[in-house]
Image (cartoon, rainbow, N blue to C red):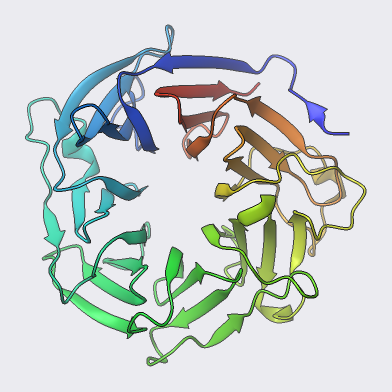
Length: 349
């Protein structure tokens, strides 16, 4: 049976007037300021927006700092210490200065943009930037294209074009020259820019005999072991893929998980992140043990999975949790976007 809640965990729910597609913490520009960037969609006006809000630490309320209107609805949102990047369902990519976005006196605008038929056709499903590494943003689309965009000038180059025969739904940098993509069939692909042309390693989604249907929605890479990545997708599936044992995925949650622990969710897992804050079993830590993994799902669960332990439920909502983000400067704080036009802030003890 799952462990329900954590003593002294505080949950603050903030109602919004628009659908919350995605949310990310921004790096703090001062010790007294904590800000988030939010992708909204007004269903009544059929209008998207990207907004930056500051968080009042005591009242846990959000105050609007700046906003920007994208050409279409935001499909993916990521942040680093220096930049925020957003992609759209119409196939454009936009990069913003994380510092300027939090300055009310500065114009909140895209400093770099990439689009056009040569870039992506239709929805960009995933984007990622890397802190202190590559000056390029990687983007993947349902059109089967993998592109790199230079943050400095917006120029881009094609890494791969599947010509519509494949579809990519998630991407994550592993090093300045390596990244991981995911897509249909629970498949993962490892790319190395030093060896162009195709992926250098692939996991073909053999999570369970006779079952390969499913989609990868989110990927994270271990902060200190780049050869180990985490993936979440359909049917409550969360698993780790270690390049050293490419055909032996470590199933953490899902219908093929043969551990005694009951999975918290059996619906779509929209996002996964390694959770360095949770230390429930770190006393038993070994070189082969994974960091705990946090995930959010279509059936409204925000939970933590620790390998070999009972999963922990942090939040259970009556609607989908579309995305979440762990504050890297204060990892006890987690912010979530909820389907029913609201934002939740989870403060762990």
